Image 1 (tube, rainbow, N blue to C red):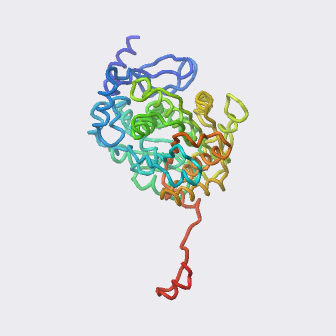
Image 2 (cartoon, rainbow, N blue to C red; image 1 turned 30 degrees about the vertical axis):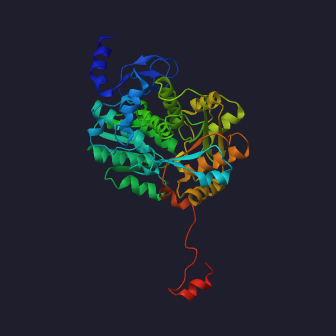
Image 3 (cartoon, one colour; image 1 turned 90 degrees about the horizontal axis):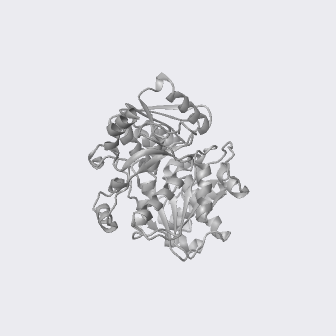
Length: 424
């Protein structure tokens, strides 16, 4: 007990309101450290807080006066108070686009919004989670930042490590989209392709953590996972603030590991507990690609356990066949009255084109999944068109160019006659 107390005193001051790691299964608490599994029941650990007390209006004003990035929410995150002054990529506070054109196409009357996270520094939401993980890596004295990745995370880790002055070495499936490979490699860290699926990559990284080769390495989505996951809460914070400090009625979230969806729910509940938003019902929907839909399948079959699958989809950023947070996604969808649904590759491409054509947002395949699932849920009557709905786009379409075939409408000689003949 004395050792734990010393460790807690040493680490806790660098983690703001965070006070412990808590097991999501049995509730046992542990000192803040680079741990991700409960030693008693092997359940996943997450950060527990003593969140700021007092007048909600004062806290709201403090947040609104903060920087236009995720550090405006530093009082609610496991980061030091001076985090905004440290060398980091300062992601977040991306646009919440009121998608009236898309709403008309889909028949939504209650207000449709796209939370467009392609505006982050490496053009995906992964910059949020990595930013929190970097601060944890600094606190624990790690010298190398690493991850297993389906692509976006690799780029986010490479960029964040470069900015923070850390070495990076990231691991990806060998057959990722070319754009994501280039973006992960350009920052000067080591990029290693693993022959196999993402789940094979993740297993390899888990082995590396326990080997002397991995000493001094912070794996953002393994031994730093409890901190890393907290970055997704900032999506919930921003959405509610950008809606005028109110909860959305419905939110559609892509599901890979499932961590983003579970942390968005956690963030919404924290805002309610702090009195920053009015407590009222909201529904959370998960979106998967048909070629990798283990959580959707379990939801439809009424199961509590998610059965792993082998991914086969163009939505490679969501191609995690054994999602760690799958069971918690099921719980949240059922508790809030939402659902988990999937769409095939053809509908993913159609949805990418639809969002681009109606709102000028070029989404990567994961964004096509959320828009495609939103459309399907509306067609099936499971999403209420009269309610305020937020759809997440988590990445830039320039990363997944192979998914969409597009080119010039016409190629003509440089003359007016040729242009007239083309009938444009």
